[in-house]
Picture (cartoon, rainbow, N blue to C red):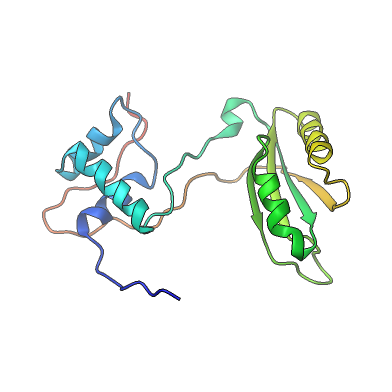
Length: 182
């Protein structure tokens, strides 16, 4: 087992993560905009993000798509009761399907909840989601796995995770970005 040495986070990295965790600003050059706020170069912003990803201090830099605003109103969590010895195989298979937007394993709750693999399928309507699921089951030969389809009834919140509060650094202006700029 490899142990990582615990190091003090770089203050500029903290400000950078804080600046992007709510989303990139909607401007022509978002990295240049962030760089100006942090008082560093655009190249430095990009290099720091690359380093954070390479070291594993930041796992990924991704997009949160607000699918409802794009017309995708039906969302189904498909829950599967996969034999434990096949969960990696089935999970990877589901994760490769274009209609699956999220796939992950969770522990069963014996006597209460038999499912251990979850995947999300979004569609413009319920019928479209169910057609995609039927096609997925047939093409991937998953008809042997017990599953259930749970459609969402209401969306309460959707955003990326927030990990860092405003860093309290002397002489540093706020890194809070306005992401709705034109």
